[in-house]
Image (cartoon, rainbow, N blue to C red):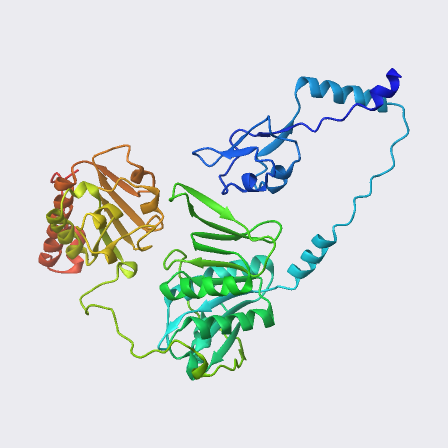
Length: 467
């Protein structure tokens, strides 16, 4: 009788436990997978496992992309496992367990394999392509190479066939073209229906769209119609070992970077803001295949009509900070609106523009189009001055890819110094004018130099500069 009771001892399943230092704060995937609500998330985005609720089902372990969760056994449970192992010693090996075939999983895998290729929607307005489309072709080329598939462009508009050649110049090998007067001006209905028509016919696995006003509107409509996932405002795109698109973007107000995967639907869709990805080198000699498609759509069937197109640009003197090569930005440390004149003087000397953090925009010190950051514009200038900006993650994601970052702040522990190429700890009201005056002196000296040949003979400047 006692022997029978030993054989009936239930094998313990153990409990889930977080491995120290392994969690990457992927966005609470383990919490969403737990069916018994045993997982809660702390302020760092890491799981806290309630051992009283955990059943050891291992769902959280299978879903974790970083393998940050493991199963452990209490001493009592380990003792039971040891006793069960002893009972099996000398016994005939058990017959292999044949796992039942998950027909749904097999069908899903077969369906996902039907989708191949990386697509980039080429945004255009009145025949002028948006630069973000070429940036997406650059990152799309890397994704296509990793997946060993084609990189294709999608061009929709009226008399826009020439844009296909531009797409080939930036890396595309094929362009799907829908050219019709009904697509002269962007409207959600005709454009999203045309894109969905192409997706249903050719089945791409990845679709990338610029996170502009037009792109955000189009991407949301397409993803809804296709019943697939969409990750907005991505800052990083890559392919994992299983072939899934890893889509990285700020989450929880920018406090963490979440990596998102679309595992069960296709296509995998992402939007990327302008200037987040580097602009690839253009090669006009590249050629590709143009696939001309027709999508029958009558103008009278479209409810929205374009009566007039109004250019919202204020004037030739206005400069878009997203395209500026030198940006002098100010933060809360500028104290008031009037103090921005010292930043403007420095920007004028360098041929740049003045920008600001979110705090300066909300205070009314700068117009909203000058905001740099997650909720503003993403910039990639050659030189970026951060004056009186602490360096919150929401601001960093909008400027951290600048070629050279010069930070001026009196707080030596400010986060901005972690990404700065050069950091100056000091009073910006002394440092910034000092830099401006020094630039003026150098320019004046250069103008007074008789010739370029004598430049090398000028003795080294021994004067004390501002520090």
